[in-house]
Image (cartoon, rainbow, N blue to C red; front, side):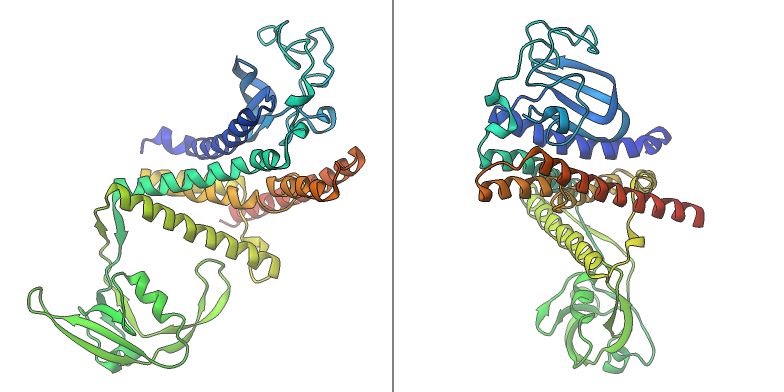
Length: 399
């Protein structure tokens, strides 16, 4: 990639992932009839944008995150579901003067905040059914998941399915594989009767075995003149780390090294969609494992990275080419989707939980309760931001 693209990669990564997330909320609001006057990339003061129909599409000063402002009965206090500062006044009862609104945005026929007309109560978020509100709140997560599937599928379709064949490059003298008669150049075709093709398949079947033995079937010889043989291998127990969480664990090792020759299998359109879906599920399982490890203490919070780390990783990914950069976008998009489901009040998961709790309660919570819950959520998010920023700075200075 060009040098310019490399250094604007963080903006491309952040911008696309956030845009897709907020687009999900925005489209869901439109579909359910909720008034959404602002669609913003970034927070704070409006830098530029354009107004089309009822909505001002804008880029704001702080280039982190974004929001969709939606009409709410509590607009002055909450400024919509996802945040955003009200331009002036309440959407419910707007003053007739365009105070604080740029002339290009003011419309005497429009609803607040861009005109003197009050927003009808049936256009508020709270006027919608529980299912509609949950749909609006979950739409950003669904769009991020969809982006991950589409990007992952596109990578497979464009670049093929890369893998390391299960071909033994070398055997450690005296190790279990050597003792069992496995030789350099052997192609491992099955372990305990289950076929294997890639080095990842071999690791997945060998690493968990810390007691007992394995039946390793290999193919040996030149193409067209191969012979198969089965070898009983008893793995040695070694100290290892979980590739997802980084936690220490005991693993099985048989003492072979893989031949470092990546093969890219051609992938058709239909197969690329299947592989993209599988990759998304695997990534989701890994993210959930890390979150579970954080709550259990198995994974250290020092491993968490924030915007600085993401920006640095984006630059490195862009230097390695488009495939790596798109892979990062897919991974980050899924991370944002899953993290937004964590039941912290200001995140989508917390908002969904609040909506469902109101349904069980049979009535809306008071403004005092909603504000108290929102404060707790804001403090939790601020604490997380401070933690990941500290981790980023410590990592930068350590380097």
